[in-house]
Structures are given as C-alpha cells and as structure tokens.
Amino acid sequence: MSRYELVIHGGHVVTPSGVLAVDVGVRDGRIAAIGQLDPGSAAEAIDATGLFVLPGIIDTQVHFREPGATHKEDLETGTRAAVLGGVTSIFEMPNTNPLTLTADDLAAKFARASGRAWCDHAFFIGGAAENADKLAELERIPGCAGVKVFMGSSTGNLLVEDDATLERIVRNGTRRMAVHAEDEPRLKERKHIADEAKHPRAHPVWRDETVCLKATQRLVALARKHGRRIHVLHVTTAEEMEFLAGNKDIATVEVTPNHLTLSAPDCYEKLGAKAQMNPPVREMRHQNALWRAIAEGVVDVIGSDHAPHTLEEKAKTYPGSPSGMPGVQTTLPLLLTAASRGKLSLERVVDLLCHGPQRIYQIAGKGRIARGYDADFTLVDLQAWKTLEDKDMGSKVGWTPFAGMRVCGVPKLTILRGWPVMRDGELLGAPSGQPVRFAETISPAS
Picture 1 (cartoon, helix red, strand yellow):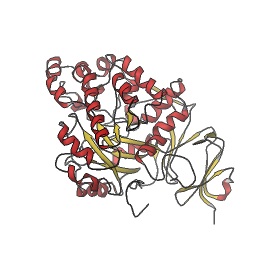
Picture 2 (tube, one colour):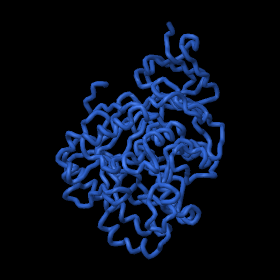
Picture 3 (cartoon, helix red, strand yellow):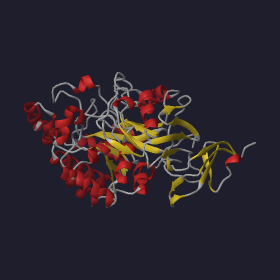
Picture 4 (tube, one colour):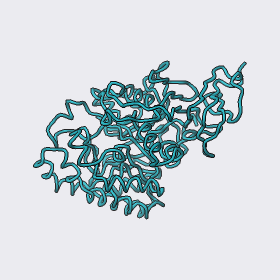
C-alpha cells in the first residue's frame, strides 16, 4: 500500500515560511508531509519542476446567479470558471432570486451545489430588516460564510439603506460581517447625473468618492458601538483607505483586481458598460492609493467580485445597463502579472488570495500549505505568458473585460483535496466540491 495518495515533487512551494524547494505528500485529502519525499511512495506523483505550488486560491466574493438568473451564470459554470482560474474555494453572495435570507434558502443553495460545484463553496446569508433578529442563529449554520449587507443599491433587491436597520443587523451576530458600503440616500440624490449622461463614463461621477466614504464612516461608527468585526468589500477610493487605515482593529479591507487594473476615463471609452460595476472603476489617483494600501498592509484580501451579465444586457443604454463583470477566472493571472512587474511580491499575492481569506473569515483547514490542512493547490508557471481571450472563459457569459491583455502565471493545475480537477485548461473528472468549514460555526464535519 502506498504511503501517500499524492506527492507533488520538484516544485517551488509557497509555504508560511517562504518559498521552499520541498515536496508535499497528501493522505486522506489533507497535507500529510512537507519535505524531501520519495515520489514512489505515492499512488500518484506530480512532477512540478519549473512550477510554483501555491495554496488553493480562495475567492471570497462571487455572484453565481443561482437561483433566479441562471441565463448568465449558475453554480456549475461559475465554479468551472473558478477552477480554470486556480480557485479551489468560493464564497457566493446572497442577492439571488429569491434572496438568501433563511436557513431554508441556504439549504436550497447547498442542495443545488451538490454534485455540480467544481470547487468547495460557502454561501453568505443576506442581512435585511426581515431577518435581522435571527442573524446570530443563521450565521452559525455550517457552510455559511457569514452575513452580507448591501448599504447601496446594486444587482438584486437586497438593500439596507437606513442606520436603524443596519444597527439591528450589526448587533445581532458575532462573526465578521461583509458590507457593500455605498450611501443610498446620496445615490438617490445624484441619480440625475447618470440619467442625463446616458454613458457609463458618468458612473464614477454619480457614485462618487463621498458616496463610499460616507457609508464606510457610518458603518464603522456602528461597528465600534457594538464591537462588531466588519469587512469592507471592494474599496475603491483613496479617502476610504486613509480612513480605514486608522480603523484596522475592527475593519478588514478587500480590493478587486478590476479596480487595480482598469482606470477611468479610458476604460469607459474602450469598454463602455463592460467596465461598469459598483462601486465604480475610478481614475488613476485612486488606483495608485489602492496599490499603496496593499504595500502598507491596509488591504487584507483580493476578491474578484465576479458578477457576470450577458453582452445583450450590457448593451442597454446607461444607466439601464447592469453593473458587474466576470472575474473569478482572471484574478490570479492579473495578480501574478502585477507581481512580475514589481507591484507586489509572490508571497503577498498568496497572503491576499489565501492566507488573508483564511485569517479574517476563520476558515478551517484551508488557505496555506501546512500539515493537516486540506490538500488544495494551484500550480503556476511564472515564466509562461498568455493572452486572455473571451473564448477561454468558463463563465456562461463568455467574455472578460481583460480580453487582449497579456498575463503571466496562468494556472497549469488545480488540485482540490488531493484530486486534480483542472490541468492545462481542461477539467478533470466530475464536480466534487464540498461546503467550506469554519472555525466559528458548529459542523459535524469539522
């Protein structure tokens, strides 16, 4: 009998101690050994010579549109795109139809994912007036990623615009709460800007810096009042980063690759509504501030905010065109390309995409290459360059705003709990994703 189910040998392994020339042995779906191992001691051996072995990527913000809008994405196609991009775990958002507000809603999503999800998965429960008093119980359901709140209107009908309701949500629960922070009253006041412009170049003017900063300040004030840990999603402004840098004891911070890569006004002239998302892509002074916040340790996580819409929907006249763009498949290549250009180190990429998600959400057994952790790996060739093309996207909508961009570090192999699920752009086997486990929930599987 083989000692290991799998040995990955000959690669450069990104561990919590740095990049090491070691082998990794897998037994029972978990990492059993790290060191100099005999490939012959395993039932299967993978030669990773010339490759870097990363922990499986964790994307903590995706919208896979199921149920309710499966014409543009579903749990099978969304997770397919994920593993093609080296992602082994995703957190899916609650603004579906129906909204994810109850235990039954969560159970229905897990049932839909069973046998169809290519990667491991967790689902957020939506915070709303109708379930605010039950959230402390709901957030403890195994596989629940926590509570997600929309302070500003976006895709779907999940919206908490007043402080009274927001405070009820904040005080009912203990897990870190994820928040889309845009000030809805200001959005309503300024909607005429978008209506009159009829072009997405007005998107960052309508949803300006004050829209975001005002909401974030309201949120932090309530979080401090009740001692609630918060996670501010897709931060886009220099002003917010400066404010959040002084509130890191209670607030963690996410940035998206979209806001790190695209910039106004050029993206709106080139891509039109394909570049439209909430909060908006902004001018270079804000992008520079986001990169500075990454360098200074203010940013904890990179999430894709994968939010696909069809090209027909995107072709509608602004502001009738929907906000959001696909991204779960392109996050890792974009970050590795930035690393190749000196914007950040490979270790920082892994911290933002693996260690950070595990740390702030208290994920059990994922996010690092260490003994006892799930055997989730992403193998990349940092010398290989590729042009991103629409035809290679696994998402049902079949397009990317980054089409034509040259990237390096395209994932070569995605391994989920010791089983290869993607090799060189081809899916392997059948979907085998399972619910993600959390240290802050009670789970029979933990």
